[in-house]
Amino acid sequence: MQFAQQKVRQLREDIGNRWPTPGVVDSYIFLVTEVGEVGDALLRQGYCNRSDYVRSTPNSSKSPDLWKELGDVTLMLCTLANALGIDLSVALEKTLSQLRERYGLAKED
Image (cartoon, rainbow, N blue to C red; front, side, top):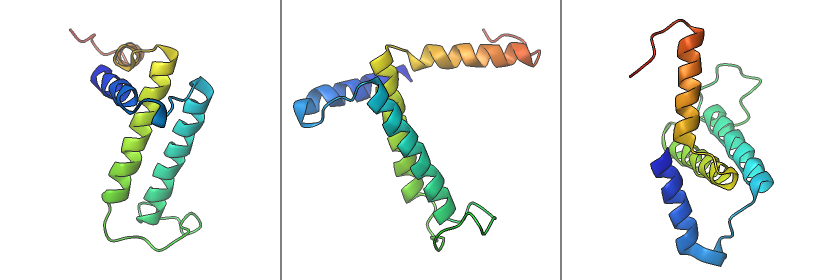
């Protein structure tokens, strides 16, 4: 994730003031919005078997919208982490370690 965070940081620097870097709260709001768009794409593409969730006709192609939406989520997650000064690689490693401990699994080397 550190690589992804650096790529996002560099892109924002390269674009400059044409694409302002959002602050913490804006980054969070954009992240939540993008996660909602992933859910919308899943529903549109027929991944849900509950008819009350589906608002439109499923597409036959399942990947284009989803890769874009997941890319947007990753971009905004990296943007939020950068705004907070959090290294997502470290955060993920700590979370995985806690889960391994919780479920009685050996620590990874």
